[in-house]
Length: 299
Image 1 (cartoon, rainbow, N blue to C red):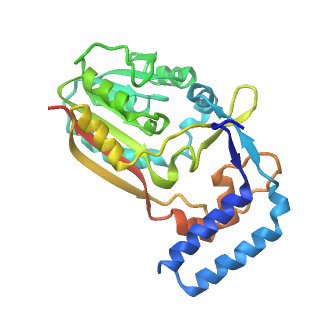
Image 2 (image 1 turned 180 degrees about the horizontal axis):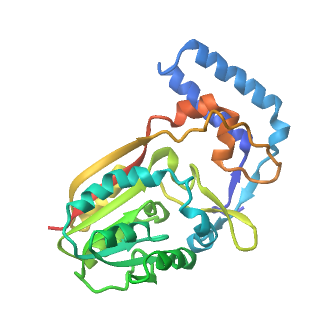
C-alpha cells in the first residue's frame, strides 16, 4: 500500500466521533446523561459492525479529475460554505475601488462574478477544465484560463486584488502561492483568501470523495494549514495582515434525516455517516471554527 492510499472504515469513523464527543464530555462540555448515551451508542455500533463492512482502500485523484466531475453540481444548494465566506469577503470587496482583479483557483467563477459586478476587469484561473467551462458561461467577457495558483500567466504588478476562496487547502506548500500573489499584485494590492480549517479539511481528516469519469471513487487530497502557516507564508511574501476572521458554522446532520443504508465495500462520505450518530456529530462539529478569512495587503 502506497503512502497516498488511505483506508476508510465507516465503523472506525463513527467510533471516532463518539470518542471525540466523550472527550468533550470528560472536559465538562456535556453531562452524565450525554456520556451514558454515547457509551450505549458505541455498544450499539459494535453490534451493527457487519452492516458497515470492513472498509475500503482509496487512491488519490487529481484536482482536475475530481472537480471536472463535481463541476455540474458544485454550485448546488448543498455547498453551505458559500454564504459563510461571502458574508465577510463581499463587504471587503465593497470597500475597494474597481480595478484589475484575479480570481485564483476560481472554480465555477463564483468570485469572478462578484468582482465583475463591482466593476473590476476580471481574470480567472483554475486547473479544472470542467469548472472553467461553467465560469466562462457565467461571465463570457472575462478572461479564464488553465493555470496553477503558483504559476499564473499574467504580468508582474498587473492586478489590484486577488481572491482565492475555498480552494487553497488543495495546495501542500503555501509559500509559492503567496509569492505568486505578491508578484502579480501592484503595490498596495489586496489578497483575500478563505480556507477551511481544523476538522473540516486535511487529507487525513475529512477528504473529499469523488468519482472520476470512469466511475472510480477516490479522494481529492487536501492539507490542513494552521493559522501560523498562513501568517508565515504571507509575511515571507511581503504581505501585511489587515484582518483575520474565524467563522463558526453548524454543519452537523439534519436531525430529520435518517441513517443512510451502508453498502459494504462502497465508501461513504462523512455526511452520509453523521446521521448514524447525530448526538456525537453535533457535539464534535457544531460551534467549531470551520472557515478562516484572511485579508492581506502589499505595502
